[in-house]
Image (tube, rainbow, N blue to C red):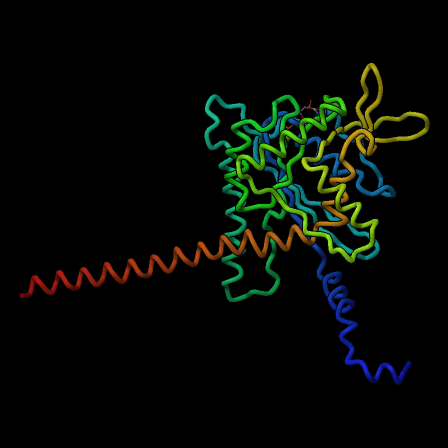
Length: 322
Ligand SMILES: Nc1nc2c(ncn2[C@@H]2O[C@H](COP(=O)(O)OP(=O)(O)O)[C@@H](O)[C@H]2O)c(=O)[nH]1
Ligand SMILES: [Mg+2]
């Protein structure tokens, strides 16, 4: 083995080196929710991360009622598992659609995303580029009403206002109010609308053909599930000796984490287990890069205009003297 080691330069250790470094630094990830008011955004956030993400963690009493979200609210939680630290930031936003005039009601969200880019750009161009906090929004869960026929005009306008700034992952809210057949039909209709209106949602990266079959199958299931049909709940249900997050109806129980009841688990696994890094990469390489290019273009334009202005000014002084 020692002989063989001599033949190698040692690049094979690179993944380990990278791994060690990122683990030391810790991961950060920011998720934002958007969509009409009352679709269960705050409830889903609560179900996704804020309380019992990890089985062995103590489950605080789930808050029975969630108040209407009035402002943009930032929740931060730190999760540590096997020495790997993740700082999750979740941005809850007031739903829109309540006002009489809903034109540009997504503006506060758009502004929030822009402000994070602006901050990052400033930090990055500053003197101290070490330890820059990355508060950029890496993913936007966009909530679609289960009661409409596909996308509403407001949805289309909002998604188009955001799609070049953030990775949009569409979800059908309150999937427990639809039958399985209805869910399937709604998904097809929404996918058609997204295509027809030219909305760019987050694209899962292509799975390499040399990946193992299981992984490829998982990948295809994920792609076919868009938009994820989700159910949220902030109450714990106890039934047959099991405790779980669920919704109690006169005719039965809905389990949030049951794959037969909703795509909740699929969504959470996508966000945490399989695509967190890709969502961050696309944010940095595409969305932020667009913003940055635009910024630099604007600054150049300003310099050019300033030069022209001075030139014209000095010329007119010149004619005065003549
Ligand atoms: N049927 C059903 N109701 C839900 C679901 N999630 C939330 N709700 C209820 O919908 C109402 C609005 O929820 P909230 O999370 O405040 O919505 P937000 O305005 O989008 O943040 C509350 O009464 C929730 O209990 C769900 O998955 N299914
Ligand atoms: Mg809310």
